[in-house]
Image 1 (cartoon, rainbow, N blue to C red):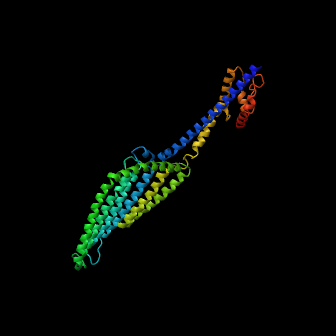
Image 2 (cartoon, one colour):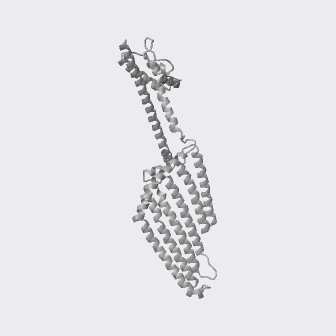
Image 3 (cartoon, rainbow, N blue to C red):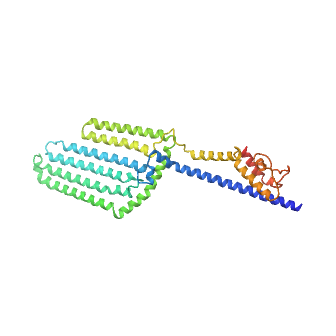
Length: 397
């Protein structure tokens, strides 16, 4: 009798331990599946960005900038176009005549304005060739490229100052109503020209200093820190673009951008003068930037075919129900009941007992754990495992 009691106690302990172990393994398996689903979610934004903007590849290749870089490059084009518009205005000024002055005055003033426009365009080019290439790998220091472009900006501004000095000098030149003031305008104009040339030379030196040495080290570090951030921003905005609202939003932004660009083209073609041509170019570049921002940042995805932001979760649930359905005849607890039955059979067989083939399954589906003879095979284990079996039975129901 004592031996039988000991066997029952041993059997109860081993079965309880087996059930607890299986429940722990099942929980671990569930968390593993969840983390796998989360990983899938993490990769979705990258896929969305790659398919939408074509810029995600820039984060790991040398082909194209990421979405932030693409947007920055488009913004640089607006700055460049603005500089071109200013230069066009300078060209128009050069062809005009101011009463009481000679042609040298208007030409010098026109040149000064053109140089100012060139300075603005130089900044736009620096943006385009620098931060506009973020993520492409074509530049190891995109921030440094943009920063060093300020040397060209200073040089062009210096040349504009020098041209202004020429205009001052021309005021006292031959054919000007102010020619009696030549003793004053000549030295003053010469001094301004010298100052301008000095500034222009300083700009060249500045560009060299900014593109090398300690400054280049600082900007290089900044580039290394910023590039991964912009890649992440591109992934996040790409994920937004992959949602059902992404397609309509992209289409709206692109439509607005195209409309503005078309208006700029019309303005440039109908004005038939340097000023309207330049302004039209700015408007067109602005419209193109708006459109580029929509497609680059949001990915340009179609709302009808965009992936749901809950896809990783729904995919995980579908996978889980599919697996349990195949293992347990469609019951949500099917896989677990099958595993429990197999383990309990193994344990009870090793201890000399026997259970019916559906003993544990019956417990999970609301039945009781019984032996093949109809009595209690688990003795005290029935009450010990009752909370577990009742809970699982409730889930199965």
